[in-house]
Image (cartoon, rainbow, N blue to C red; front, side, top):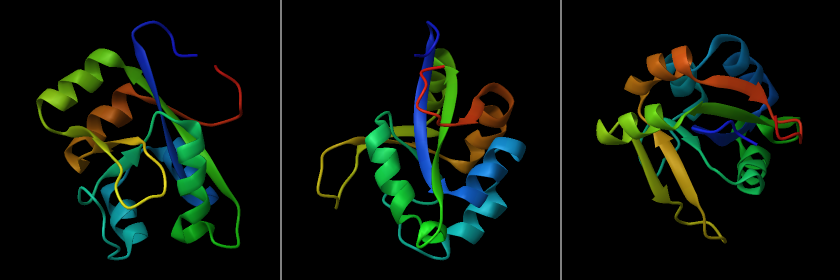
Length: 130
């Protein structure tokens, strides 16, 4: 469980990308390389969800995950930072479309990466709350 005043979001990806995010933070160059021109709902950016099962679904379908290991990265951040990014339109919460379930996604613009890398805490999902 998140500490009071913090938000926990999940990002499903291949194991190599997860290790890079946890060790080095978010990188626009890596994101562009990984996206390989695939269409995205809200454009280039980092996509997360507040539902772990949804993150596992996307981890299993990530391009680098096909036939390989995949993982969920946990991002914990202060609620005030998330609200600030919403106000600056560097983050958006919106329903995911074109999937067989209903869920919201949190999209982060690349211009938010510096703040996220400085203020958010990234770790692998282990099934534990903290």
